[in-house]
Length: 304
Image (cartoon, rainbow, N blue to C red):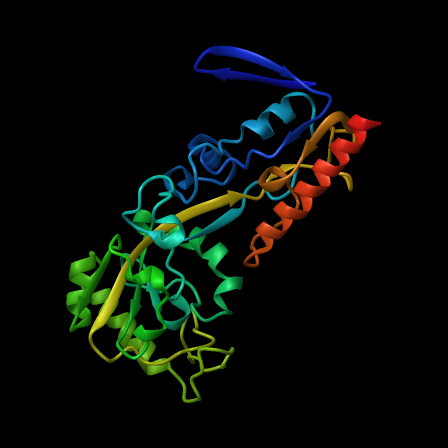
């Protein structure tokens, strides 16, 4: 029947016939990230604002709402290693580094740990942030040679970027703090494993490696043409997947599956929409659809 808020002027209570919770997940709450996502997640960078701390979810759970969805998973991407702890509204999303399908990703030991060419970026980028966080020091380096640098997105050309450009792989390792011998061996093994075929960055070209773990399933070309570019990245969390259960009218359900009168939810704090991974753009669609649903239902119920 309303919201109780703290303001600079003190505590206020605002009463209403309906309340819509649309205040995000718990991505900006380090303690909740560690509790639900697991060890190390308190160290992730937050891509967005510092205010999505799970307050709406916790308030609803405190009055008997039902938790729902994949609480131990989230949307997380490759994010510049030296980006600020939370998002910068001037730089916006440009700290992201999403051209990795055309290069290689290695950890601090110089070892690859994902299939960079498993699929188009839109189907892998939101789960590879987790993979980076699990590496030593929670960081990685994306490597490109001169043949593919023209494919890099604009985000690689901003002034606020952690990068190195060198004539040799050894120098690249030294400048970015990667194990030199490990990186040299990784590049050597990768180049030897690249199979012949037609390279086409606009399709799943099937140009792959053989006998390599992990493989590179598409867009595999030797990394052998200097200058070499390296971009240091870490994990940037976008939003969390766990949240509240709602019905087809956008009403929040209690632990017995009954609607909580007057309470609705939309956006990131709705659970059950994403599991393990995320297709690009679908969060915008869910926000628009569920936001309109909750608003329409709340309005109808208040008028009724």
